[in-house]
Image 1 (cartoon, rainbow, N blue to C red):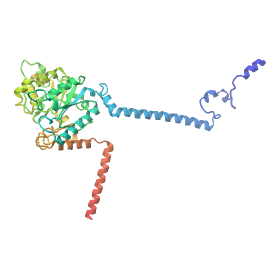
Image 2 (image 1 turned 90 degrees about the horizontal axis):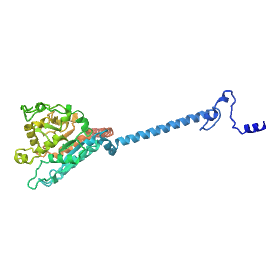
Image 3 (image 1 turned 60 degrees about the horizontal axis):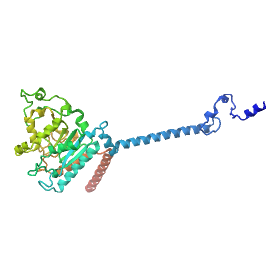
Image 4 (image 1 turned 30 degrees about the vertical axis):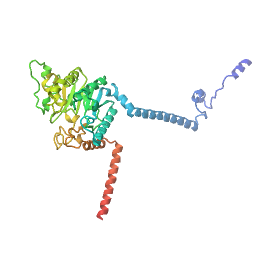
Length: 397
């Protein structure tokens, strides 16, 4: 029995407590990993609650940090451009904005300070827009576009420029041409949401809806197929390859969109045909614009793939273009409707291009202020009103 008592004396001892219920509690598990302070004292319960509170605080802090990191990744411009370019998030990589620059330099006339200021503001406007939505921007220096030794196609470079852009960006689908005298008034509008989300609703195929040129439509020759003789072609958005606005005088190419397709390649070849240019360029006052109108009128195969877009969706005019009053609701810019783009078309003929560009730039900045900027503006305007009232009171006194 002596050796049995020796073995039992080496076994661990357990605290059984004073009450019968305490004898069966697993004291080691209850106090494992915690500071032992006795049996159920107030200090032990306080320390337990404190530990749980700290643990919750740590988890909350980790959650806040994760939210901040996600917000930074979502809104930081470089990362935002990256995810908006991807096909499965934003799809911005499918769109290229083409902007003609240096139009008046080195060939026909010298550029002054105002012309350089217009170009600077226009380029900055387009760069900010494409950076926001993940598009590509192709700025074309027109002074280096001399293609022939014996002649220079002044204002005839759009077609050739578009073909070069299609070669440079092989993965892009749509190409948006913008003249230099344009300004994107609403940078919060993406092309996807503003135009391409529902092409059937944002465009129209039947030119009779708005036909300032009085072009007979649809063609009715017996040898044409049903789609060509239809006023709306096949009626599918997938068959639209060229989107053109119309102003009071007909087609307007200050802002238009072209889609990459076999049909587009064929059209651009005919549009840029040197033979047509040599024979007709003296008659076509508006250069490529008149050429496209001629092709649309005389080539029935073009009509089933060309769609028109209401002018104010992508090419609003200021007062002085298509009427001095600027009151045509189908053509002229409307601030209350927050039109997308304004095109100072024809401003070089008796109007102030720089003045118009400056005014619309200031208006766009005002309309697109953040909440904090609007609050600061409201506060400063209120302060100026109070100072004016005080001065008027002192003068009257």
